[in-house]
Image 1 (cartoon, rainbow, N blue to C red):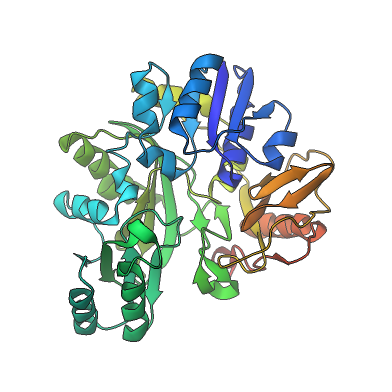
Image 2 (cartoon, rainbow, N blue to C red):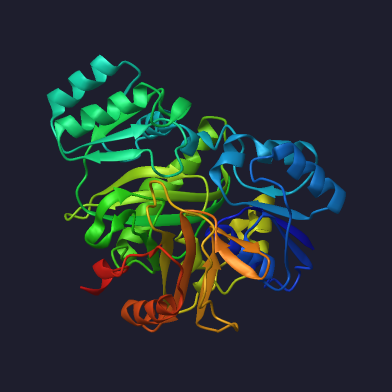
Length: 424
């Protein structure tokens, strides 16, 4: 079968790499892909932007693509799944309406309130003065979120009232995130430990993926500004078997049921960002309508099942008849970023020290890279994700950092403590 993976980041490199391992995969196209997917055996890059829905549809028709899997959020919110379905093509992901779970923070919070899904107390504002009055009444720490898509950076955890006020002014003035910040959601700060809970959904049924934990903050010890994610590991010890069952019961099942009741049944990857309080209570921080990045990379290192078969079962509504098979070992991935990220960073630096041959227990997934002649150069904020397996999270960490130590470019930056919460 011919498969198309839409996107160009580390998540898409991992999804394409895994899809190509299916015994039924003939060609796996990646649009637009990156240097890693360009060099990977059995993958072929296509020079079409991930959110150019009409060009992607034309390509899929022309190539008679059997299955399309969407990586990033933007094409989902633009309705790529709707367009492909209307053309009679199999496309794995939620419809534009269902993708509002991620596309609008206000839609998401209102949905959770309506269906009694546990989440932080919140209010939504379009007026700066009203928002500031609410912040002053509630005090800090407090969380300010841009309503629309902001590439994972539209959330400010403000430690002071002044910081929260300035975030609101920045967003509602249109300076910070343009139209994405026309509305803000202000919510209570939740203490505890975060976990990423990702499932494959077919509308009615959910098949859980391996648990994982992401590291959003740029610097060691979870300090510094929020990013799209600086590293991840799987499994996440914080998600005990008991908590796993509760998440399915208290969050995932009511979410799928609620989407059916609201007339937007949800098919696709569904990611619930959770906060697990010290007393074990669960709250949903956010939904993503896709696999997390970088969580996908360690999770795909551990998935032994055929990813394409799972996606097809979801499209057929038969997920309740399939099971997943996982590598027993842990996996950990370290994101190698360009200095300055998530602010301004340089592009075009030559990367050296990438592994020359494929190894069974470690893999470098590419994100912001491109080919320039014979060189691989940086082309984004998050450049690579160095992943490794290990008997324990500590072993996986040692192996991943051994891989990381080989790789160089001018201005490379990465955290040196990925996995610390699971190891202490």
